[in-house]
Length: 261
Image (cartoon, rainbow, N blue to C red):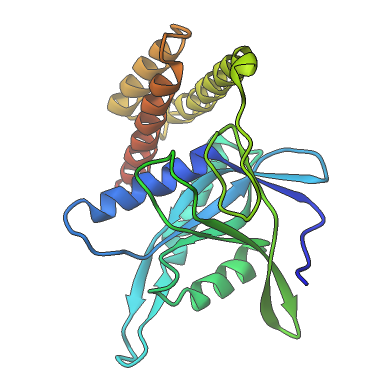
């Protein structure tokens, strides 16, 4: 019988979109299944709930010193810089989880162990990327427990936040009916407002004397103006487009931050 976390785990839709976006960039020139690891951040919630709402790509590479058993490792210094950038613009976020892709092909044991040690990570997510977000989701969540200096993984329940994606967790997926359409629109509008607030934090950081980047600021300001226009006939489609643009801007910011060091 499985033991579960005493807190409720929620995974925000944006985390999955970011994972899909990064994976698409890795795979756009070939059909190879790549390794990918994301560090997940939790936001402010009550004591009984953990909301994984933001992610940053962990820069991994293969350690081939042992040609018979190559293992994944990551650049700790580069990851620290990325975490610092996230915390500058979102000081309320705390590293809490790891998401790995294609775990059946790659040995993430060393990466998971080191991230758990350095950042006190408490949950592990296995995810298979997909381009069609309406398909049944292949996502598994585990709590990380240290016993006798060894890491153990126990299956945990989870919920998806702000999404209608079906969950492949052995339970039925319940969709909102037409009578709840007004509530859905309200949720989407609030989600857009949250995106605006997140982008404004990015602008405030980038407008600092040591962080100015006019090109990125112009792109972000234009995006905020478009989001503030309000609801359209296809708010869900437009929101998805804006999320993709934000992901692209996040990557631009990371690349600029790396090159300026």
